[in-house]
Image 1: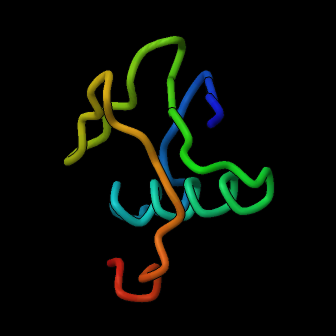
Image 2: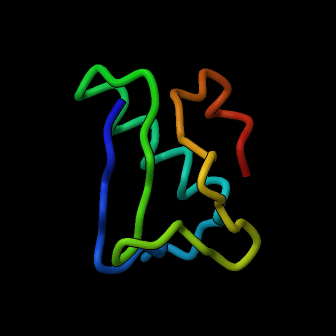
Length: 69
């Protein structure tokens, strides 16, 4: 398990929150061989336009990434 704490988290390409989190989660879990990833923004849980993560929410590798919009 790992934690990624960013000072800002938003898609520069204008992708949906779901796509952004899938790309971020897949990249870090695969490259650092993590079972799950906790995403923080300035020490707080990630909050996007449509997704608000809670304390028990983690990112994991999404094998169906091609179906995410």
